Image (cartoon, rainbow, N blue to C red; front, side):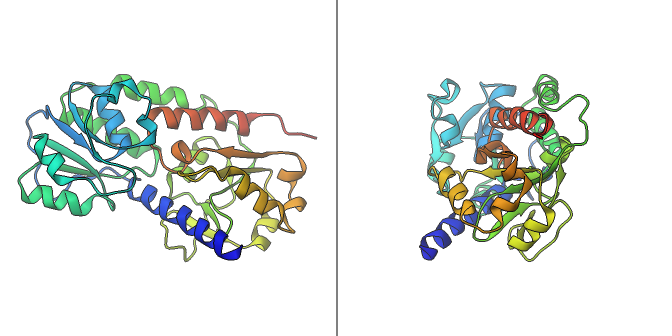
Amino acid sequence: MHRRWLLSALAVLMSIVLAACTTANTQQSQIKVTNLSAKRVVALSSLSADIISRLDPTKIVGITGSKLFKNDSRFKDIPRVSEGQNPPNLEKVVALKPDLVIGAEGFSNIPIQKLQQLGIPTLLAKVNNWESLEELTKTLAKKIDADPQPLLNRYKTFLPEKPTQGFSTLALVSRQPILSPNKNSWAGDLLAKFQAKNIAADLQGKSPISGYVTLSAEKVLEANPEVIILVNPPQGNSEAGLLNSLKKEAFWKQLQATKNNRVYVFDYFGLVNPGSIDAIEKACQQLKKVLFAPQAT
């Protein structure tokens, strides 16, 4: 049983590592990107693919495989150059004759370097806060000669107009170890945008995952959050597994969040990994309900 939970936790950790690889400030790769407007773009991350498609759907010619686009008609006829967490097929990428390939820094570095050697213009991007999402949108719009403003205006509608100080909140992405986002992650920054008092915001630790800290049961009990957010892993359906495992812990029933039935489950995409514009919007809508709802007495 312990080994099974350990393997499950490791799977979650790996997913977050990949999320971290697609999350921080937008950065241009070492190769100089042409100033000419890109007309054929291959996106190696779901978020970049989504942004390009919304800015100008005629410019996207290749995308990474993602369950987020499984039933999305916009991408029905767009070639997939990779599936899941597998590296992209460079032969497929080159065959599409792109004049810009967008990768996720930390995850796409090696294939991007190989494409650079072939003289293909590239861009590496990360998004770990709201401002970097806006900057990525502006950067991509400039590369394909599109207007970013409509999309930037849409982003603004996701956030609360006049956020009030929220409840003390703890977001958990795994049980063994107990892992929570601090302010240096996409999830942590999103919680801050909703004025949630993120218990882990200013904590630092030895976690190998940037933007996340490990917590002890004693630390969670000491913090005693008013709201707890559990995050589903990107693969599989272990919502019940994570919740049930926590219910077996001695500290769980002592928390005011559990006593007041204020434990909520969020999807991995949108809260931990931005994933797509729709995923971000869904996470924001759920945060509004969770953090601005009247507290039980």
